[in-house]
Length: 172
Image 1 (cartoon, rainbow, N blue to C red):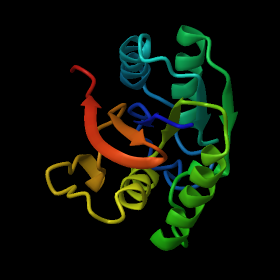
Image 2 (cartoon, rainbow, N blue to C red):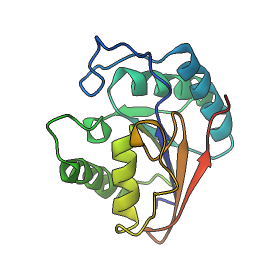
Image 3 (cartoon, one colour):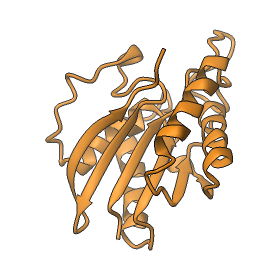
Image 4 (cartoon, helix red, strand yellow):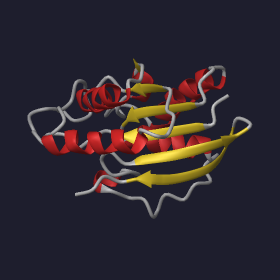
């Protein structure tokens, strides 16, 4: 039964206007993004994460690779947590998130990490809180609910989300 969910935003990408940000593969991680990913790996080292899911975009894949290398975790890449496409409604992003959560409800995993983007993180938080979470105090660059490589920790009690906390922000 799922007890802990770690929602991890990708590290800082390289800013290149010639590379579409919201279309795959998107930009790669910058050197700062790689350093942020190493900080997240150190933070997660004692959290007992058993499995990672990751968006197939370059910046999330590269963030997940740092976590996999440091923590020895298995990873599943899935479009269910990919970036919010320009033509996609937020309701569709929430539907994708709902589908992944339904699969986790039947899984044997207790502690799962998801390497994703700002919009899917917002969708997870709203979905799991039944639209009750107040994210006004969590607005970061681009309107995201987490900074790059920020980590939201959701704890569950008998399959119901009961606590939401932004538990990690990378230094500098």
